[in-house]
Amino acid sequence: MDRDRVKREILSLIDDNYSNWRKAAFYSDPEVIVILDRLQSVWEDNDMQGYPIDYATDEELQVLLDKARRYAYMPEDSARGIVFSRQGGGGDESEGSSFSKFFRRIIGR
Image 1: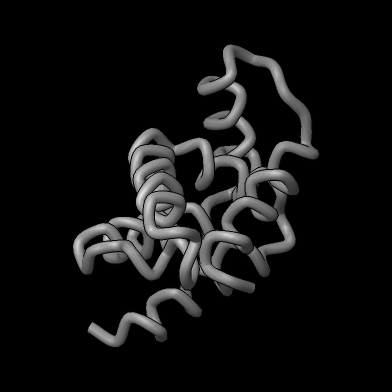
Image 2 (image 1 turned 135 degrees about the vertical axis):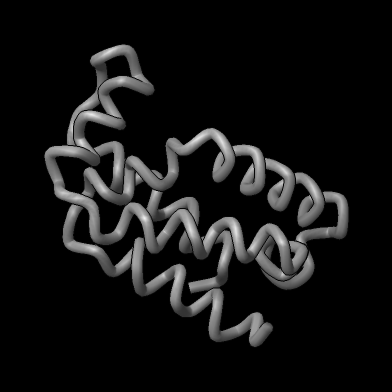
């Protein structure tokens, strides 16, 4: 696995996606949240050296990539529905922006 290529592809699929709903659907995915929370914690435990994504296992990177591919191309209405269902119908379009800022920090862009 070319880890740098995978990180770039995730970024391209999600962070560079024009749809904040797709971004929000990705970042609100329960598996993505677990992985990103772990990466943040490990990164902090390692004196914030490098970037959180550097501490991902190959398996975690693969999960993130698979999820990114799934969400990046789904219909925007579907992504919106996922976000609303995960938030109990609350939230707004700006959710994707804060999610993408978090991920940008994690992968170092």
